Image 1: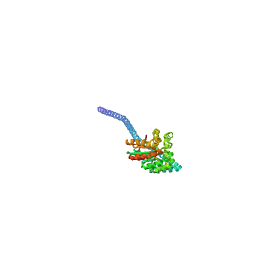
Image 2: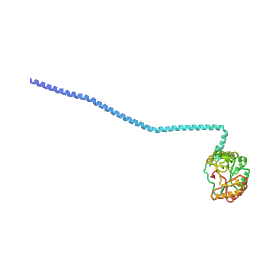
Image 3: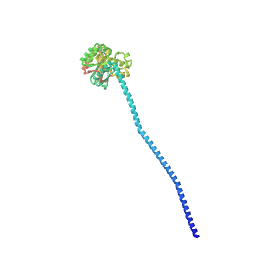
Image 4: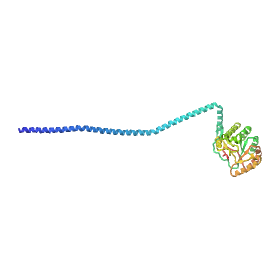
Length: 349
């Protein structure tokens, strides 16, 4: 009986142990099943957060890359824009040139005579020295080289206004006799009156200048345009009569006080060189031999100061009659007679 009880007790103890073991194992299994989803969830959350951070970083990199690309491309775009604008301007300029050329061709076609004159003016300009150019509109010489002072030494410049006259032949013969070069400033109406004398003077190598048309203060000095107009008219007449033009001018009564600064600028822009004088013979006042001594005194005073004298005289009978006295004295004193040239620095008041 006792043995049966012990046996049952053992069986009960074993069963209890097994039961407890099953309970513990079951609890562990349950605990593991609960913890695994939580861990997995945490892992998923962590992974998602990491992907989000990576995505944000990629976006930042992409933005920086775009900004950098824009900065690089911006100067290129500006350069392309400038290039396009330049092409547009060049195209317009080329178009305007073509239109201008077409217009000129039309005008030439309408004016064949004008084309012929233009060709003659171009040919004439090629024959001029390199120190001068020609105003094609008025066929007037424009000095381009710096003007220089007249040569130093005992040199005088003889100039005669208001001609030519019927005594022009006598005047030139006297000058040739003393081997005296001279310059004539002519009035346009007198050139038309004595065309033969005009041509003769040029053939004999004298220097020619212009003195205007009216010799009337109230007409020539109305404006800068009237001054220029009178000189241009005189030059055109000279060209018709002798086939030449000149750049030398002397305005009536000199450049003071009538030639205003804007007048001087206007004649200069037209290609003229304005001359006055520093010795006044006053032959217009004396009308006899008294002018000779007056000139000699003024010349000596200037030469003592090393200033080349530019003598004002007139194409008058009284002046021509007593001119040999003056030339004889000057030649005996060793003076050389020169004519005014384009390269001379003009004497002006």
